[in-house]
Length: 186
Image (cartoon, rainbow, N blue to C red; front, side, top):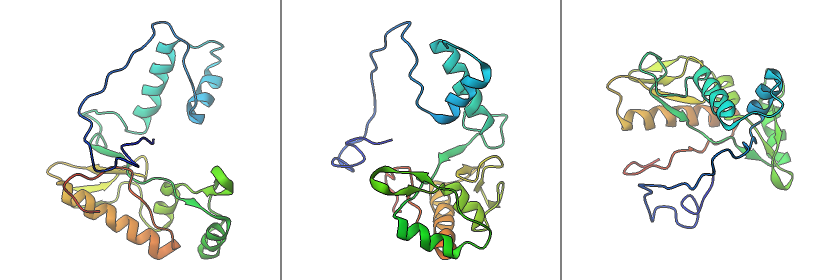
């Protein structure tokens, strides 16, 4: 989620290749809550690396987050926005603007709270599956922008700006994109 390439060296380098040194037969490291819950549900006391891999693929497939030519969401640009990190005062201001209940929140470092960007997008009036020409939202997850046939990068960015601007108008929260743009201005 974070590295020197997103911070101190942002814009200086383009990563074109990576190498990994992996140990065969190592124990899986499970740090993703949804994956942990799925492993508990399956009652696997000591899952293998392959068990975890298969489960990750299953969870990602269910969210249309794998390249699959038969999936209408298969050309997803991924989770397009990071979840906003808000102070208590910013979260209180968000709650004041909410007409339909209290927005979900999760603890974040230094006493801040994290609010799901997908919740903000959907509650700002953007529905799963909505489309604007060649670009739209996934039918499965409102955080995923999908580039349908003939979509251009400019159309994807324009659509994402529309989501950002709508959330800001509705809730006063500015969404930040997850992707790093090369040759495009956010």
